[in-house]
Length: 160
Image (cartoon, rainbow, N blue to C red; front, side, top):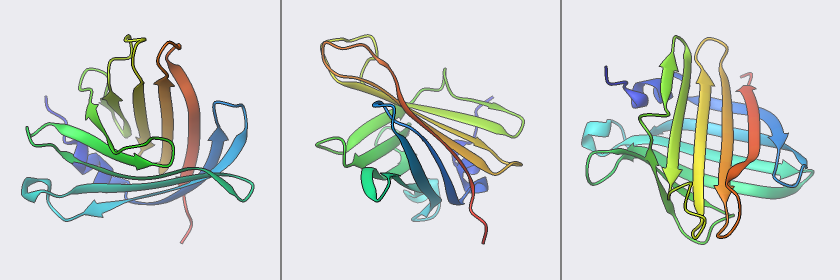
């Protein structure tokens, strides 16, 4: 059965706050905003994700991403961040993504995690509809280096 990923992201739209740990072992605070972008996916729309991580007052990661269908009709996350020199297209891995009841995990990949010759990256978006929580995990490997989880953030829906 095909899962409607856009439906899941719509259900958890809103602002989330929390924190995590980065690849240098520093703890940080994080804010994520998830919302609709340009309406229906069938008409070119999708979901916008804004994410910021801070150590104290210093921004260590700032991101603006769009989740939607690419030119081939496949799900992708297009990430513009302060940590990469270009907008990167991460393709949804249907085999690693899953939905179990109210829990969703969407896995987006850039490059081949096994290719030690190139930069590669994986983004896991984890959310729970009922608890209104959102987790964001970054895995990456530089050329010649090991691939692994480098940062993780756990957030709860902000009180309005």
